[in-house]
Amino acid sequence: MIQWIKTLFAKTETVHNTDYTKPEVQEQQKNNIESVSKKFLIVGLGNIGAEYVNTRHNIGFKVLDHLAKKESIPFETVKLGALAEYKFKGRTFLLLKPNTYMNLSGKAVKYWMDKENIPLENIFVITDDLNLSFGTIRIKPKGSDGGHNGLKNINFVLNTNQYTRFRFGISDEFKKGQQIDYVLGEWDDIEKEKLPERLETASEIIKNFGTAGLENTMTTYNGK
Picture 1 (cartoon, rainbow, N blue to C red):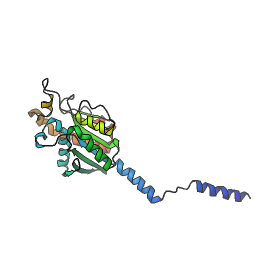
Picture 2 (spheres, helix red, strand yellow):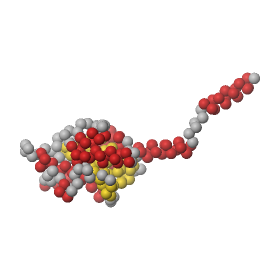
Picture 3 (tube, one colour):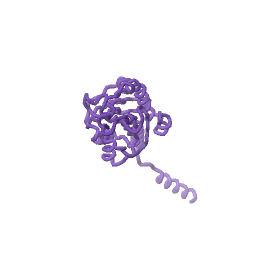
């Protein structure tokens, strides 16, 4: 009788501990999670058109162009922008230059974020900042738009400001009433001389964000 009761409880425990998910389904779910965590959407903000290529407001485009050229990866015209795929240390970086113009940047970010199933924490937006001296770097996990139309639209479309942004300082060396001309103006000679080194650092920041994480990236590069 005792042996029979032990056998009954053993069968009951086996039934309760049974995982009805097929092994191949479990493995696929695991792979999907790992795949998403290793994919990043790197968004450089700017305006399309030859007249904007070398302007301060297009530093986001400039950073992505530098990385793509260095790694010999092409941009392809896609829906709502130009896209390049960069693979590094098991990570996939989707470099996106929206073609929606600055004040509608959120539309492109949302589309590619959803299409590629990229989580909010893997979004990295590169933008210019008037409140920082030229070339100064500030990386933050969230924040206000700071009056920047690109960030303002992204915040609106995503309905959150909880995404990482990389602010590249362009300084505020302009006279009263000339902000637009300054932002949409080209780099001066001194800035042009220093820009290549800053672009190289920006490229390293992108790779570090995907491989070492946000906290490490902020500690290593903020203020430099």
